[in-house]
Length: 326
Image (cartoon, rainbow, N blue to C red):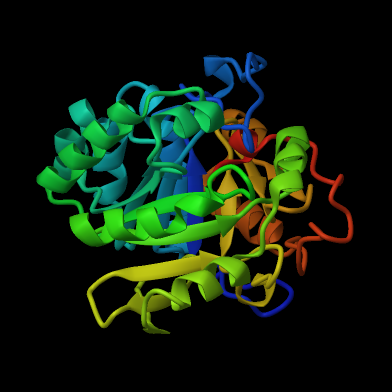
């Protein structure tokens, strides 16, 4: 069957796969403190259903899968799911996004199961600031990061959401940290996704400001890293360190969008900044065959919108980021 191509000629070869909407942190730009209105586990796709959907995507030319949440490691049995997905024909890039709080125990099993690349959310190296942003403990994250490094994951990408007056002053410290440990660093602009995202957007700072500041201290040259995401990379001081800038607000990258998101309850979200979606769970549980599943996925891609409207309509997306998948 032909590749998945949306109405604007973009090839869709990247699926971000949420396995749970639950999380053990409460990042202020993602999920409100005290929030508990989660999907019930019986409404999550089972591992068998997830594998069916991913197999269908692979048969349609999608070869990159990123496992996300919520926090994916709060769902039991994730290494077993990874092992099954890694064995699917056509999947040649299997990665995972995590807050690293549970990586100390799971780094080894995840690597053995087939994950090779990690994205780790880390917005501050100061314990108090980290607690303010996430309500969590920095030491657990750093412990998990070191376990992942020892297990052999490469690359390990650190994702830092930059917020003015909260953590923007730590950009240089994060560069030094990543240089010391051989991590890749990506700065991310805040996005108005859900009420929490809109509140965090009050601390929005354009990454051009951060890049200009770093250029005063480091030599930055254009760089490139393989991967399916939208980061624009620079190399630092001709070292192995790459810094990526993800700019959905100041310089949107919708014209090169190659991805869709599957939520934990089996809903395909066709754009992070729009409400366009397509429910697969009812179809799966009604017993449709594999060929029909591929047809529904292809039809869903035909509905993908051209671009988000974060600036034009910041109140449009009411769901929290954790409900969509990272």
